[in-house]
Image 1 (tube, rainbow, N blue to C red):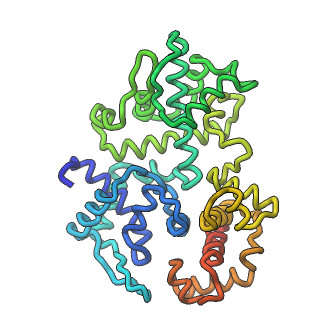
Image 2 (image 1 turned 180 degrees about the horizontal axis):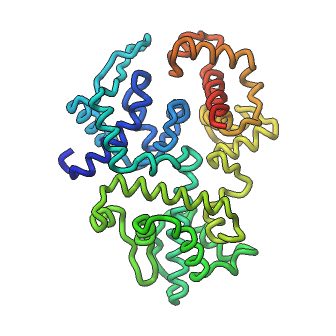
Image 3 (image 1 turned 60 degrees about the vertical axis):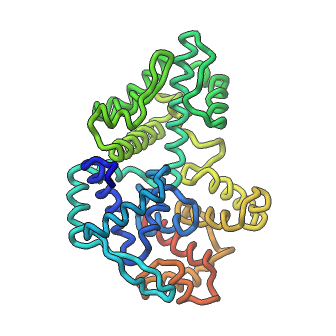
Length: 372
C-alpha cells in the first residue's frame, strides 16, 4: 500500500469495507473483487442482487487482482477483517468485519459523502450503458470539434471500432443529422451539467478532447484538483448516471444528441444488458435455452445467466418452463430456514431434485419483487 497517498488509502478502505460488509459470513472476500471488475459469472451476478451491491458492479473494471489481495491483507493486519470458517460442507473460509473495521467504514463514508456518490449507481445494465455513453460522448465531442476546425483527419481518442462506427452513423441518421453541431452539443451539455457542482462539471469537461484541447486523464485531474483518484472515479460515474437519467426522463425533444448517445441499441430493453435483452427477445419468440445458445453461438450457462437477469428486472416474464410456483416456494422456504442465499449451500440442502438454475431463478424473482 506504499504507493498510495494517505487520502487515497482512506477512500479505498471506506469503499471496499462498505462492499465487504454485506458479504460477511456468507462469501469470501474474493467475491467483492469479481463484482468490482464486472465479472459476468452467474454467482457474481447473483451476489450483486442478493447482497444489494448494485453500485459496486464494474465500479473499478481495471482493478488488478494483486492490488485486491494487498487490500485484503492490509485489512486483516489492521484488525478490520477477521477470517472465519464458513458453516458449510465445503469448508471454505469466509470473514467478518470487526467493530473497528465498521468504525473505519462509517468514518470514511461520512468524510467523503460516499452514500451520496454511490447510491444512484444501479448495477449491471446501468454500468454497460454508462460506458457506452461516455465513450460515444468523448469521441463525438472530438469529432465535431475537428470537423468544425476543418481537420477531418485526426487520431481518435476512442479506439474501439464499434464506437467509431456508431459516431460516423450519427452524422447520417435521418432526423438527427441536422442537430449534429458544436453549438447544439454545447447547449445540451450545458443544460445537463448546470444542476451539478462546479467541481463535477470540471471533472467531465476537462477530460474531453478537441481540435485545440487535449483532454486530461483522471490521474492528472486528481493531482490538479487535489482529490483522491478512486473518489474522482466514483464521482464521474455518479455524474454520468445523473446525466443519463435526466436525458432519458426529458427525452429527445430537449436532448436530441445526448438522447442518441444514451440510447440502448435498437430494439433493446433498457432494463437489461444488451446481451440479455437479445436473449429475452428470442425467449418471447418461444425459443428454449439450447436453441438460443445455438443461434447466438453462446454457452448454455451464459443464456441461463440472462434468464436470471430477466427474472430480476422483468416481472412480466413467466419462468414456468424452468421453475414452477411450488418449486419457487420450496426454494425460498429453504433459504429462509437456513438463513442463507449461498447457491452451494442451497443446492446441498435441496438435493438433486432442484437445479442451480431453478434456485437462482427463485432467488432472483424474490429479489426483483422486493425491488419493485
